[in-house]
Figure 1: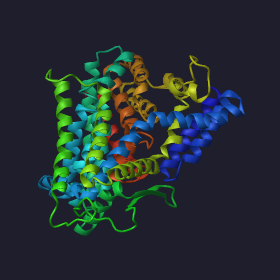
Figure 2 (figure 1 turned 120 degrees about the vertical axis):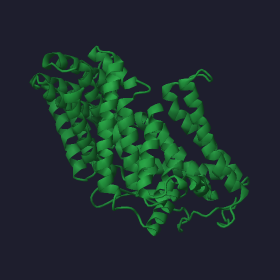
Figure 3 (figure 1 turned 60 degrees about the vertical axis):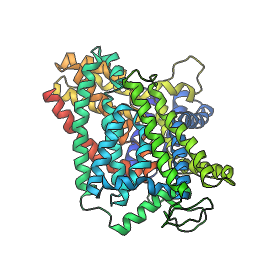
Figure 4 (figure 1 turned 90 degrees about the horizontal axis):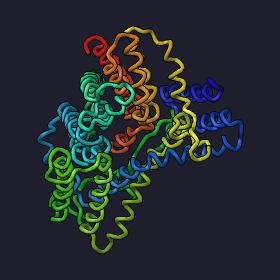
Length: 503
C-alpha cells in the first residue's frame, strides 16, 4: 500500500480511539484530511483545498438530514406556542403507562414503520408523537434514543427486508439470489437487535427510570427545543451537551396558549385542539398513502427515496398552517423565526459531523476524486477498500473465521456513515470466501450487510443518520454512539456466531 493509505488508516484509527475516549474529533478529522491529500498528491495546495472540498462534499451528502431535523423542530416549536404538542400525545398515555412499557412500544413501533419505509423519515413521526409521551412516564431521553436507534437504524435498515435495496446490492457481487441474502439478513438482524435491546434494557432502563418531577422536567426541555434557542455546548471532555432555552430567557412551559402567546392551561382553546388533532392526522394520512402505494394499486407507487421529502414537505406546510392559526397578524414573522431556530438547532448540534464525514469520504472512490480536485471523469483513490482487499488473502479459510472476518469487513465498510455503497464489494468477497472456506456465500454476504448497516446506517458512528436520532431526542450524538457500542457489538457477535453454525 502507498504512504497515503497508511496515513488515512492511521487517521481513521485515531478518530475511532478518540471517540471511544470521549474526546472531540473535529481537529483530528481536519488534520487527517490535509495529511492524506498532501501525501497522496505531494502538493500543499491540494491538501489545503481538500480540507475545504471534503467539508463541502460531506455537507451536500448530509444536508437532507439537517433540513428534515430543522423543519420538524420548527413545526414542534410552533405547536409548543399553542400547547398542542402536549394535547397531541395525551391519547398515547394509555399505551405508555410506564417507562418499561414505553421502551418496548418505542422499539416495536419504530421497527414496524422502518421496515416499510426508510428509517430516517419515520424518526420525525415517532419523535413528534411517541417520544414526549414516553419521556413523560419516566423513560430517559437517552433510553428512548437507544430504542429508536437499535430498531430503526439497526434492525430494520440492516435487513431492508421490504424494500430489498441492500440485499440487491449484496447480490450483485455474491452472484446469489437477493432473496436468499434478504432472508438470512432478516434473521441476523433480529438476533442482533433482540440482544442489543435486552442489553440496553438491563443497563439503561431497569432501575434508571425518572421520577415524576424529573420526567416532567425532561419533557418540558424536549418540547422547548423547537421554540427556544438550542445550544450545543462542548463540555470539558469534548462531548456535546444539548440544552434548550426559550428565546426570551425564561422557563419553558407546556401550557396551552392562544395566538398572543398567553393562554390558559386549564382551558385549551379551539385552536390548540385543532392543531393537536390535525398534525398527527396529516402524518397518519401520509403514512396510509405511502403504504397503499407500496402494497396496493389503489394509489400510484411512491419512489423509495421520496419518503424523507414527503415528510419534510408535510412538516414545512404544517409549520405555516400552525403559525397562521396561532396568530394571523404575526404569522409571517413567526414562521420565519421558528424555521431559523430549527436550522440553528440542526447545525449547532449536528454540524460537528461535517468535517468527520469529509475525512472518511477521502478514502472512498465515489467522493475522493472531487475532494482531491481530480479532473472530471478520473477515478479517485479507494483507500479504504484497497486496505480491506489487501488483508483478504490472510483470512483463514474456515467457515467460522470467514463469518467473523466478513462481519469485521462490513463494519469497516460502514465507517463511511452509510454502509451500502460498499455492499457490492462485500458481496464479491463473500462469494470468494464462501467457495474457498466451504461456507454459504449468501450467509456471508448477509453478515457483512448487517455489519455495514448497523455501523454506518447507523448506530456506531456519529457521522451517520444516528445524528437524526440524537437531534430529535435532544441527546448528545457522541454519548449515544458510546452507549450503543457494547450492546450493538455484542448483538452482532452473537448473531454472527448463530449464523455461522445454523444458517
